[in-house]
Image 1: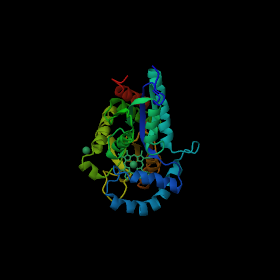
Image 2: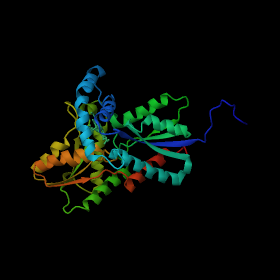
Image 3: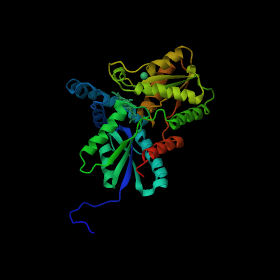
Image 4: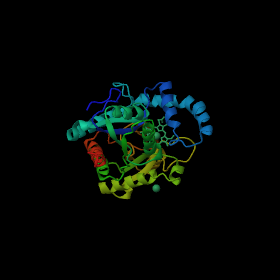
Length: 341
Ligand SMILES: C=CC1=C(C)c2cc3[nH]c(cc4nc(cc5[nH]c(cc1n2)c(C)c5CCC(=O)O)C(CCC(=O)O)=C4C)c(C)c3C=C
Ligand SMILES: [Fe+2]
Ligand SMILES: [Fe+2]
């Protein structure tokens, strides 16, 4: 039976997978940085002050200065070959590796893409493109091991906002935080072992530096702090270490409020002053190296350690496109596809 002439085209049903990460400015100039930071810092999941109070402060004061400082920081780590931020490059590599693995198993039935909550490629453009390609079901995977309102929840919110505009919504599954997934913990432990094998003297202590959030978010019910603490404990157990060999700290404090503590920048200086001159730092909350690791940890936090008398500083890179990280993502996606394929 043929379709009536004005009937929309019927496409073979597919399943889309979206790997979602935080975001990235399109370039490092003032206006690109301002656009990106304005979108990011206007998100109520990130900064939850009432708009009438926050927007004048943000638009008139913070965004007149911060785009210059952040632009300079991004320039120091920019991927000049591709003219993009490292987070974008690494997320694309992760997407290519996951695509290859899922392609082998499911062929054309599953389409994989990646999106950014702030900046491009936007979650809207990617979900619309997948729908265009026939995706009637979507696995939406925020690449944050630990749940947090300012990361996981806002990515999911945006996906659902996109669906709100669609006549024919795809079904959607959002992937839960995976901080206690044994494959994630094993991948972290392997990355520590591999890095330690390349240094002459084994670091005395491993600092697990997580991105911070205001302390208030914890008391208001966000489990991020607990997910971070548990990640460190599981990593310690996987490595067979004791409490003296590994600690949890929080970085990237923003604004005058108290954030989760101890602050990494202070803690590394305290360690150095207390005689721990050889430390390593890992950032388990980031699934890809980004400004927060390549600039803040490798430069700002390293300087704080050195100025306090620290000597050896080893940075353990994020899991990026390590094969066991990709295997973990594929394992999680396969689990989410159950009953759909
Ligand atoms: C102001 C509040 C912020 C909260 C709360 C916050 C939480 C949070 N962020 C990440 C992960 C990333 N953040 C990144 C950059 C970044 N974060 C903030 C502010 C908050 N983050 C700013 C202003 C910036 C931009 C850089 C700067 O100007 O300092 C990034 C890197 C993006 C990149 O392109 O490299 C990541 C990743 C987590 C996991 C988190 C809470 C759990
Ligand atoms: Fe952040
Ligand atoms: Fe807690």
